Length: 218
Image (cartoon, rainbow, N blue to C red; front, top):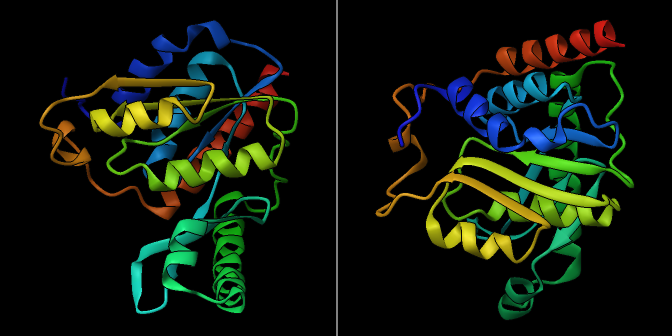
């Protein structure tokens, strides 16, 4: 399955999520930036609220690509104890990295959301969306953060994912929907005809449109 673009992918996923249509206890959270056009289509089709869920990885000293943890929307810190303990990283370094990434996370959320308050996830079903999963590390951190924020149920929905990643995450969340799990996987962008980068302006615009449509529905 090859998707035309992220909007097409979102509409495909919406059909798989139809049982959540119009439910007051359900919301859609999208990982920016690429997950937002996907999440927008889902939220519109299912008449659900949409928000961003920003996750910033904490790179290890000298190996920024290796994550020792992540900080997510709501200021929730998720620490990868295996990495921290194996490399002997002191707690103060984790705290310093978290403080730096927290500032960047807050900046991005203000940029995307403006003055609108974040949606409250406590006790609600969250449909967590991205445009695809390769390793799934960011999505895994997002799901862990939502558990700490006491979401009642976490549903991860992605258009395309590496088969192994999809299976691994299935054991960590309440429901896992991968519309396509091609083998060989190669990369997320291989499964879109148009995989052009989503801009910050597009993220902001889609969130504003989603908020406006919710006001009209109410």
